[in-house]
Amino acid sequence: MLTMEQLYQQRLKRYTTAMRNEKPDRVPIRPFVAEFTAKYAGFTCQQVSHDYNLAFEAVNQCARDFDWDAMVPNMVYVWTGLTQAAGIRYYAVPGLDIPENVGFQYREPPEGQAFMREDEYDLLIANPTEFLFNVWLPRASKDVCAAGEPVNLRNNLSFLKGGMALLSYFNAFGPQIQKMRNDYGMVSAISGILKAPFDILADKMRGYIGLVMDLHERPEKVKKACEALMPHILHNALSGADPDKNVPIAFWMHRGCTPFINWDHFNNIFWPTLKPIIEEIWRQGHQTLFYAEGRWLAHLDSFLELPAGSIVFHVDQDDVFEVHKKIGHKFCISGGIPNYILAYETPDKVRALCKKVIDEVAADGGYIMDSSAIMQNDTSIENLKALTDFTREYGVY
Amino acid sequence: MNENETIELKPGICLSWEEIRKELPEIKGDEEILKRVWEDNEALAYMYIWHLLLSF
Image (cartoon, rainbow over the protein chains, first blue to last red):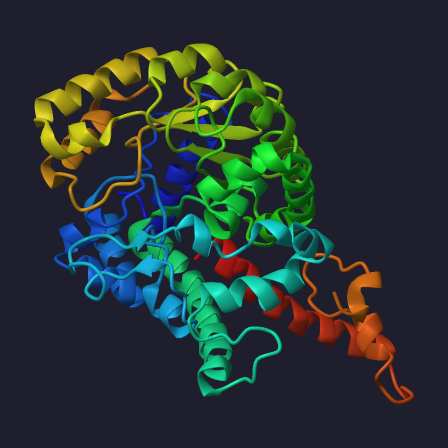
């Protein structure tokens, strides 16, 4: 009988060996379970979104009951208590803006109400941090006053409450990760956050439509803005990275692929302002997990320019078998089990697909079992148990 | 932009020590500790705004 620490070390070795594109003792299981944890633990989406202690409890119940190798300490990462304290406008909060059992939503503003205007690129480029405080936040928060306006109580409280809430939340992760290790032998799957400069510009500043227009009307400004964001994005990624260099920085990939943008824009703006970040992260000894939301098959040749082992490529809507043929010799692959199968198909179908993936993708190691996208509360508990039990039983090297 | 625009800020800082240093009276003790603690607290403000953007 293994102690919890022995179990932890066994799982850590299994997980990291696969991420280095080598062959561990078994196929590791690292499900990115988000609102699924609420469903399993008997909580609502509102409860796990708005009370991070309940979110941790839901994760821990899964860690206790499922034989997985690694989990995210809280995959319902956006604590809506914090965003409310800071006055952030862009989330639909479960139980407030949307029904209590619907996962939180990001609401991108209409084109004319983007948080950054088309003529503000020079301000952003000159000093991104000052721009965020003085221009972006007063628009993104309903409480923060614009520069030059008289401040008021709600403005002051938003910074005090928001800042203290952020520290409270971040400081809670250490004990949560320790509890996962001590009580359940569970590895914390990722550490640190990365988004592409281009995606940040699209998601949170200009909006997708605004940015697409800018790509045609002022592409040089877009590129310079991405370049101005690069050192800050790198700094933030590294500041949250695993000091032991075991688990990767998670890179959440949004709308940088075709057909959201064209080839020229990918080749001249998106990739040149991202690739140096990935290379520097690798130079400092950390892997990056490419959480490739959507379809990225068309861009795999670009990713092959990266050093072997520098990334783990997570498959969402791409064909996991095609991805494996193309880049499996260089990088570990994870995911590829479609969420609709886990939500709506039978356990037999789940087992059949897992068998095919283990046979064809995991045969030589370098594969981590997971669904395609994060698992919300439509995921069937029975099907996720089938995935887990089958992979444990069949996925032995 | 304001007068800070001539000072290139490294990531992790919102207001540079060099700028704040100009506002202080003569430093009678160890400037390094003043600078280090200033920058440590700057890093918290920096973390706040950048994580609002990147994480939330």
